[in-house]
Structure formats: structure tokens, C-alpha cells
Amino acid sequence: MSNLTKIALAAALALPAAAYGSAPVELTQKPVSSETHMDGLKLAKKAPSRTMAKAPEILDYIDETYLPEGKVTSLIQSGQAYKLYWGDPTYVEYDGVATEIVDGDDGFVYLKNPFSHFTTDSYIQGKKEGNTYVFDLPRLVYPATSIIGGGTGDWYISLMQYDAEQKTYHPANFDAAAAAGLPQIDNKLVLTINADGSFSYKTDENYSVIYGMCGTAQDNWLGYAEINCTWTAFNDKVVTPPAGLQTEERIFSYILIDDFNDGADTGHYVNIGYDGDDVYIQGIFETLPTAWVKGHKEGSIISVPTGQYLGYYEYDHTHTYGTTVVYEKVDGQYKYEFTDNIEFTVDANGNLSAPGQGFLYTPGANPVNYYSALLDPRIKSVSAEMSNIPMAPTNVEYKLDGQYPTIEFTVSNKNVDGEILNPDYLFYSVYVDGEQYAFKYDIYGSIDFIKRYIPFAYHDGKDFFSQADRRKVYFYFKDNETFGVRLHYFDKDGVTLLGESEITTIQAKPSAVEDVEAAKDIASVKYLDLAGCEVAEPVNGVFLKVVTYTDGSKETIKVMK
View 1 (spheres, helix red, strand yellow):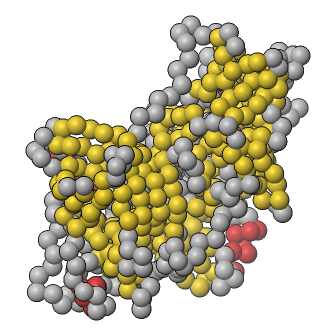
View 2 (cartoon, helix red, strand yellow; view 1 turned 180 degrees about the horizontal axis):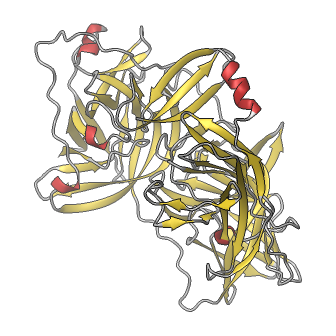
């Protein structure tokens, strides 16, 4: 059975969607020894006073505006890297990162997004020299105007030198490196072109030099870096069903394993169609609802091959695939073994099931980690007699998150009989002092005009948060007495109401849990911008206040300045 790392598919309730990208979460993660990366890395807190006669020149920023005409080659990147997670550098292995290289008509080459876990939307300029690409550094890749929520200084790419005493990396040839006694080096990124046309970056055996992202405000490492990585030409295509394929909407149920679920029995709806013995299923993974997989029917068995390309996952900038596995649960952890296909058994009623098997939603066709696992998948017809009354929301809580009140609540896409409803047609609404609340665009910037019904899984990372079955909504008023939440189930036309739940109502006052939190002793407080970088004092934007208590617990609060 293989050990894979589960990575976050979406941000936590308290965090905006763009804050951290894909957070590594241990499932059956293999241990990483000090021989493969440096343990206990830190970020330097303060840069030394300038000691050099002249700081290294930072080369100009290049985005699509300044990109010359040329041949564009789509790439998929894999390897090992560091990324910033909760303010600390975190080692990750990865596959499937989408990027490109441009062979410019001006004689230069341009590599887009040189960091696997931080999308800069910029390019670095280099030259082909023999069997290498050579890029002069440092170069600006993320100007201060791009920093989410506000920030200080520009961010640039540079070779990084390891400081064993501070257990951190410093940008080559800047003051921090000089103060640490590190020698000056030729600040060039050299990528080796391999015989198959791919190209690679490999650090030395002691990991003393890597390339990373730094900030000009303090000339310090920001926690993002590449250790070893390879770029390969990307040519995979999504499955396209035949024209005129007749499909039927069916219930797709499974055991869900992802960053927020560890065995939830849930599901959604898919479309299935037959073209002779070929079978097409659309929407296996909710993140890419239009993606198809193709299988083949022989007798009562439908085989769906592994490794089918699903499409580009914009949130994480990855090329994603459907990977088939068999699984077992050992000591509370799920372990997987890759298979060539998943085999559904078709019963007399045309329903499909694949016990002991599953689909993994993976970045890259050679996965080292995955976003979600759908185990024991079943596909069955929708009964005309099924109830359209949703389960009522539960666990409704009123909280004060910083200066603003919020409500959090748990929802289900099941009806009152426990059968799965189509989440695409589910909405929730909030009642304030017994009246249905209208969310207005002048207060809630992501809302068009006025909305009373919020889509079931709506998440804007500012005022509305969706994490698994939990929801969180911010409000910008006080002094009301009650909050209520209700689910509504509409027909496909989005107009005809088929059923609605009871209203679950609570008093508008802080919960006892908050009183306990308020009584705990604070060990430290730090502020992060929405890119995950620590700032001394938040100004002009949205920030995250991370409070660490003496008992080791943490609380994250959204702060608006």
C-alpha cells in the first residue's frame, strides 16, 4: 500500500482562499529525513544593517505586457520545495504544477511562475547556453502592488545560501548572507536540459544553495523555494464525449477523504451516458464538474482506466487527474495501492458500485499527494418518490470574530430521509430577528445586487466561507436579538422551490466557548498578510491575526484596517 500526502483542497473557515494555497496535511505521510532537506527551518526576523558598498541590482519585472512574441510550450512541474504555511517554511513534494516556457523571438527564453507554490504571474528571462538554460538573478517577480491585502517592499527571486547557525536561507550576496559569513557566489539559476527535452534544477548534496523568494523590505527569505524540480512538456487532453451523447443525471455517493473529512458518507450528482459499450461519466470530482472520464462495459463490469486528465485546477494552478486505487484502513489511516482501473459492478437495476476501490483527485499523473479520495463509489438512479425537504442546519453558533459578529453552522446536502440532494440546487438563507436577510452588494462586494439565497457551497474568502459541511458568514451590524438559518432546494430552473427546511434559530450572543477562549493566557500574537507573510503592524488591507495561547491552541481572526 502506498503512502500519499493529502493536501488541502480549499482554505480553512478562518482563512481567505488565496492565503496559503495547498496546505500539507499528514495522512500516511512518509517521514522526511535530514538527508533530504533541512529540518526546523526558520525565517530571519530582521535584516542586518547594510554592510556592502552596493546592493546587488534587482532585474526588471516581466509579465505578459512585456513578453515578446515567440513559441510557447506548456509545462508540468514536479519536485520538492518549501512553502510558507502558518508563517513557517514547510517541506513539500509535488507534481502537476502548470506553467510554461516561451522561446522568444528576441533570442531569450522566458520561464513563467518559477515557484511551484506561489503564483507570481510573471516570468524570468534567460538564455539557452549549450544544454542549459541560464537565468541572471536576482529579478523582481512580485511587485508590492500585487501583494494581497497590502504589503511592504517588492518580492524577488534569488539563489539562497544556507545559514547553519540561524537555520535559515539568505539571498545570495545581500547583507544577511554577508553578515552570516557566507561567500559571494554567481547569482545565476542554471537549469539542465535533459535528453528527452525536459529540464531540471538540482541543488548540491548538502542543500547549501537553492533558489527562493525574498523581500526587498528586509532582504530576507519569504519561505518559498525550490530544492529539486523538473519541467516536462505537457500535452494531455481531457476526455471528450461523442456529439449528441444522451445522458442521465444520477446520484453519486462515496466515502469522502479530504482535508476536512475523514470518512464522511456523502455524495453529489453526476451525468452518465452510454455510446455502445463505452461509458462516459461527467462530474466525478466536484471541483471540476464539467470533466469527463471514460470507461468500457463488458458484461456486468464497467472498467474506468486510471490517469485520465481532468483539467486545469485554477485555485492551485495544477493539472489534475483521476487516479484509481484499492484501499484499506490501518490503525485509523487510509492506505492506497494504485491500480490500472476501477471496476464497477452493474446490478439488475443499472446501479453501479465498486466496494474496496476508489478515485483519487491528484495533481499530476504520477501522484505523490492528492486533494481528495472518493472511496466505495456508488452510482444510482434518482427516485421520483424521493423527498425534496432538506435537513435543517445544525450546530448554529454566534461569535464575535474581532470587531464583527459572525454565525457558523453545519449543513448537509441530504434530505430529511438521509438521501442525497443535488448540491447545485441547494441554497441557504439567514434570518435576522425573524426576517429573511438581504445581502447587498455595497456591503458584500462579491454579491451581485441583492441576494437572499446563498449557493450551498459559496465561498468568497472575505465574508462567506465554506469548509466541508461548515459555513461561516460575517455581518456588519450589531444589537439584533436572533439569527436563523434555513436550507432551500430548487428545481433545475433555479426558480421553482421544491422544498425547504425548518429554520434553526439561536440568540445573538457570544457562545460559552468564546468566554473560555477569552480567559486563556496569550503566549504570542502575530499578523500575516493574505500571502501568509508576517507583518509588523497591519495597515491598509485585510490581515490575519494569529493568536497562540499558552496551552498550545491557536485562533485566527480576520482584521480589516
